[in-house]
Image (tube, rainbow, N blue to C red):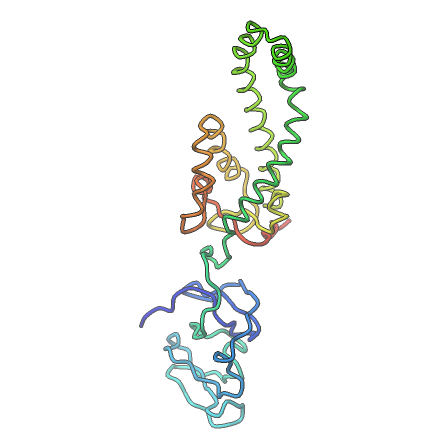
Length: 276
C-alpha cells in the first residue's frame, strides 16, 4: 500500500478548512479553504466513498445514497463505525483523499515557511531601529568616535595632509569598537525578542516569527545565542553577510546559514507562548 504524501487536504472534521497531513497522521494545523472553481465544485454530486484502504482494525459504513438512514456499504475491517455526512465526524479517517490546495515549503509539522521577501523587509525594519539605538550609544561607549569625527572635519576644512593621515591611522581601531558595539546591540535586541515572543518588531510587522526546527514556540537561550554566532563572524567578513542573507532563495527550507547553525525556521504567523 502506497503511503499518502504529506500536504494540505480537506479537513475531515470541517469542510470549510484545510488540515495538514504529515504522511502518517493529521496534525493540529488548519487553514481556510480557497473557493473551488466551477469545474471542481461538488454541489449536487453524490458523496464518494474512500478509495484507499483504511488502517487495519478500522472500518466505515458509508451510506450508498449519501444520506443517513439508507442502505450502507461495509468496508473491510474488524470493527465498524457509522459514517455521518463527512469523513471524521467523530474521528478522522486514516488518510486524506481530497485534493491538495496549498503549495510551498512547510515545516515538518505543517506550518508554512516565511518567504525571502518578508524576511528581507523584516531585516530592514529591524536594521533601522538598531541603527538609531547604536547611533545614540556610540558616543557613550566609544568616546573616541566623537574625537575622530572632529579630526576628519578639521582635516577637510584645513586640507591638512598630516591631520588626514592621523585620521586614517586612527579609524581602524575605532571602527572595530563601533562594529562590536553594533553587534552587541543587535544581539541583545534580537535575543530578547526571540526568547520571549519569537518576533522582533520587524517580524511582527511582517507577521512572521522564528522557531526551532523540531518544535514550535519561542527559542531557548542557547539556540538564540547560536543564531547570533554567524552574524558576529560576518562583522569581519562582509561577503559572508551577503551569502547568509541570500541563502534562503535557493534553500529547500528557506533557511539562512545562521538558521542552519542554530537549527531554526522562520515561519508565517506567531508562535505559541510557553506554558506558565
